[in-house]
Image (tube, rainbow, N blue to C red):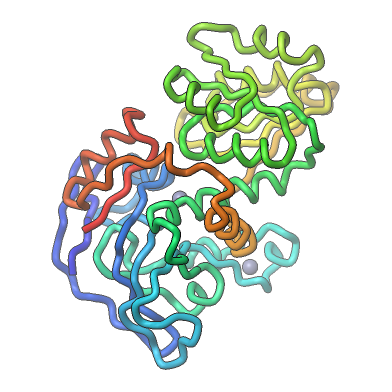
Length: 338
Ligand SMILES: [Zn+2]
Ligand SMILES: [Zn+2]
């Protein structure tokens, strides 16, 4: 079968490897569409991450073989799956930190989604795999895992109706957050350096849009709310976005960090400011089977607008082109097929 190996940040080769075999609790799917996630890009760009490797975890595919114990799915089903599964038994799981579970971090689909056939374990079948209904475009199903991550982040924030949020960064994740917040009765200010993306953010429900290259963010927020923002969600975290958030949050407000990497993630915090203003700095990492199920229901119920985030599906052999388009923000998400 074909698998896309990443050798370095800019070297990718479609190579022939053995098709994975399956045990009686497992099944094999044929990749139909796979999405490039921001976290894949971090792994591709990070010289510390071991290469060559087959990356990718957002996948919709067709079941082509099931082990004899697999009852949930049958040959021909179109499914969507996700890669990590908590053990539900360890200290982390029993205390609500499912995405910190060691088993969660170790579990993965094999060999990765950037290839022709993918083996799903019994646990994947039980917890993270869903049948894509006929009426749903399988490409839209690729947004279930990212949406589940956003749902988990929202669950971790104690927010109230009419809270004013800032969503910093209007890529796929930002656009999903904006729509989730609006459907939960919140008010949203979208912040991004890209006017085109801000205009889509407005269409998808953002009440206010702010471009820090034209406007001083804290000044614009003051015009929206005298007290400050209740909850800031940073889909882009660096010293500017976190620094701004800590100054435009209301006293008692929360900043939620959703994604951070490398040198950009170092920041000096004024603890006196955090203490006296009772600020909460928190984060949310990945998704759980529960948030995946809710995301699946939202996407299949077509409760969020996904189509403006879609672009032309590329062949996997054009991986570099898709990566480049996504990194230059020409498209929201690169989606590939074989
Ligand atoms: Zn992802
Ligand atoms: Zn666990």
